[in-house]
Image (cartoon, rainbow, N blue to C red):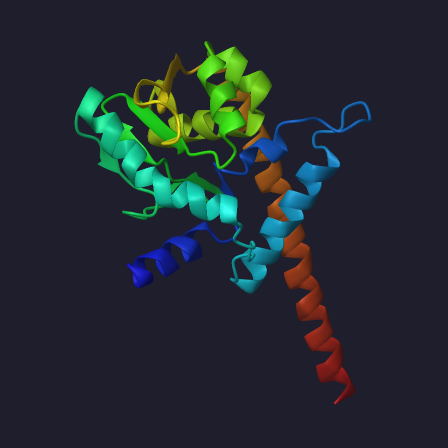
Length: 224
């Protein structure tokens, strides 16, 4: 599993991924500006990963550990209701590449659905999830979760998604929330256009860096 996780991390390196693609969606403040400052920073981070071949390290928090430790149980409970699923994520790490600079990993797939599981450490967040009724609710409440699912639908070529929230501290009939929704083609088109624009910028950045490196070597050679 350790080798599989390392391989998964390397395959993600330098690519825009489903879990962070929401950073590319907002436009900048200036008229015609394609990306916000957050989006521009994200593009540069991916360019640095692409050049160094080193994934950016993110600190592990207790909330993240809580989520990971409960994800398997959430999917077990889901399977009892909806049937057998194909799992990915930490139990079967596979990176699905959609283009040279874009890919992702859904937590699981069930027939025509991609599944994304969230196990909030803060029970208030699960309460909020229980109150969600539509995809628009999810999009407004948590754009990062919404665009993660849209991204994985595009990558896996699926038309449907299920957002799953799980909290074992709630009464049993409230531990699991499942929100189903269909892919909105307008949002899929927006996502793809953002990925294409960001990929072009990433490619331009890396090309300039490689050209700069070549020029430095040539200058050093001429001095010698």
